[in-house]
Image 1 (tube, rainbow, N blue to C red):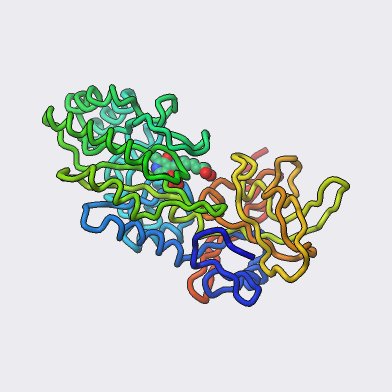
Image 2: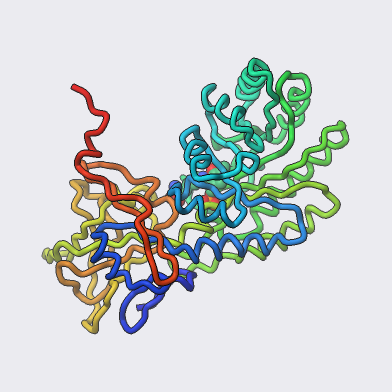
Length: 419
Ligand code: LLP
């Protein structure tokens, strides 16, 4: 079988799928299935690829933990020097607990509560990304009451089309995110008049799974225009946060390497004394992980054949939610003639599909399949639908692996329930 993803950490060796130096069947035997498996090496290499692309320019990578909030994943990246992009009080709690330095945490989100704002101020984060004037006023009142100053960056909607799925497009004028460019100058003028506020940056995030550098270039160009106007008014900002969104290969796409983004953007930033912030999520975690699942049954109906797996849409919802395509491969492919199957889970929904129309030799019950590229927006979007305990997570490091989140139990399902 050919793997379509770009990851030297996932490979077949003598007919067996490995993550780094560990055969996946060893993990399945020890931990059971379904299980999320992540390669530590992939995480570190993807992070380092970005860092080296921006060498020579002041920059900070704030890993977007919404893509994967496992503590061991955060710790690995924080250990490399990464900051964290958080979007809720819960993410802030997790980031701090995993040892992320608060001065490298940026806090985004289209509707922050007062409690979340207090938590961010008290932690001493790098800045809040602010998405509206009422939110700016709430942050100002809250900081003033605490006797603190809250650093802020305006999230601007640069109104560029990232040419990705409409559900993950965020930087167009008609999306709910950010403020229009025309409102930006007023926003910063307002910052200067409000107590408890220090304007330190400007932010954009145009969408996710973007496969071209041009939308980033257009967006940054627009933000740089604003930065120049602001300078004319005596407002100098320290941070230009260009968000996340760098795409990866799911299906053999050829995403630009990190260096291509850096070289497309560097010329626009010439002469500007500021720190560039990047918020990659998927680029780091996507192809680091896969969902390992076992075949329960093969079911042949007149019109179609199904592989019923023990992993389902509650474990990985991307195919059901966005019709996202994940490569599904047998862990031990064997030599049989490939046949076509829909790979589905046991949940009572027609949409419980992991992958439709996939070809591989007919598996037997108990055989293992790997749903690839599931390290981003996989485990984090999991649920307990159909009262299915969520799967464990395993981190592979060279020839060893460890459980970094336990499998949920039936007890976990009812924890917190009252009569
Ligand atoms: N920064 C901000 C402000 C964001 O909203 C996001 C993602 C990121 C950074 C990270 O984007 P990335 O580098 O991972 O593309 N659940 C969807 C993706 C939603 C992305 C939401 N925002 C999916 O499964 O494809």
